[in-house]
Image (cartoon, rainbow, N blue to C red; front, top):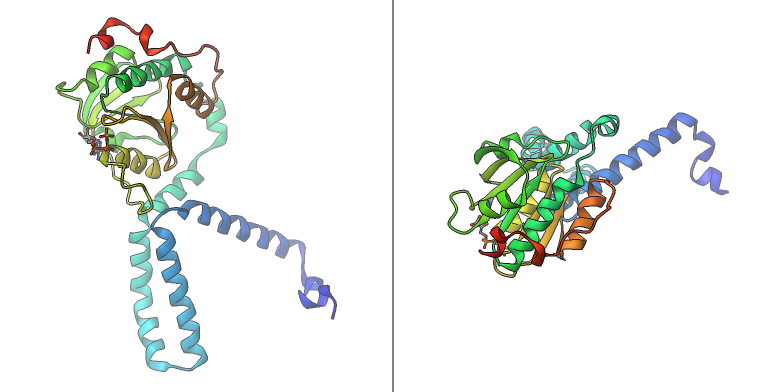
Length: 273
Ligand SMILES: Nc1ncnc2c1ncn2[C@@H]1O[C@H](COP(=O)(O)OP(=O)(O)OP(=O)(O)O)[C@@H](O)[C@H]1O
């Protein structure tokens, strides 16, 4: 028996090849989506139940089969509820239109330089900060949990919002293009069990919002002054001004022309705090 007969390749048609390709791409994207989340354990549990169902068919275990087929419809509803975040993310990714992205104007890196400067200054002063930058997916539901602000994105405003004791310092600032649109916003916490225990709620909120949206988050740790960015649930730690700027420039695909000024060149507003 040759390979063609062994794998029935003689029956392979163009449509079945395309079929296999699409299913492989779908499986690959589902695995990418659930990688590193609690959904992995659940997917393993579902796999085990499916296997168990075939074992009951094999041994003709009628009562177990009856129980499994009776609870299956409820089980499907349960899976939809449990995987709601992952399903939302998958649908949002499908809905992202690369054409729309091409036509929407690029954010001005100058505006994000304000974030770089503020993060650097806040880090030096050990002031915690949580800045969420909206991309294609709207963040209106998170904005509604905070206080609406409609102001130009500026270093001074960011530093004053996060100053300890300022009324809006607790929670996240939301940035849409070159404007600060909300402050003191509450974000969903990630439930990822594999995260370091060293990451507290500020960092968990930063990761959580990027698991549910395509936002980019800049976090400054109050405890250590460490600057991190989070995209798609992945946290990148230990950034400094230039690396944060470079990272934001690469995410937003804008020309990285001028390096961010060091924190020592910042205006007296920050330095005085
Ligand atoms: N769900 C949330 N949404 C928005 N902000 C949050 C949320 N949870 C916590 N925060 C912010 O994080 C602060 C508490 O941070 P905490 O010390 O628990 O976290 P952390 O990750 O260890 O941060 P740090 O390194 O800055 O101490 C809160 O005062 C609040 O400003």
